[in-house]
Length: 84
Image (cartoon, rainbow, N blue to C red; front, side, top):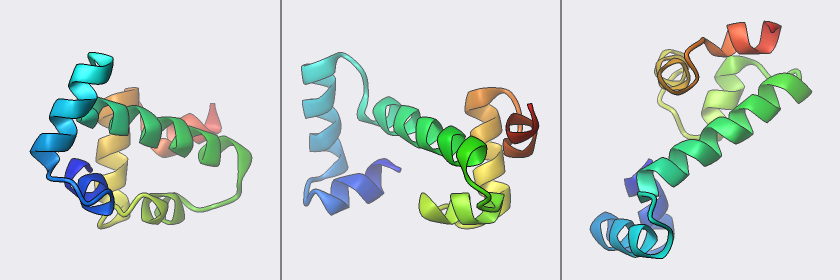
């Protein structure tokens, strides 16, 4: 997460974390988690994309890793979220 976005912004992860934390009081990692989960939830509810496709959108290595990440932050699987 953080390494990927820091690289896209041509920053070191440490510097990016420091600047974001100073500006917002929230770690860069937490901002990234919030963004990914918000977007993933929207895609799960408003599209017919597969869970694999949604995981691919956020550069997860595979569907299993995306599912574990989602479940850790949302307390339910992507499939459960979509079906509720």
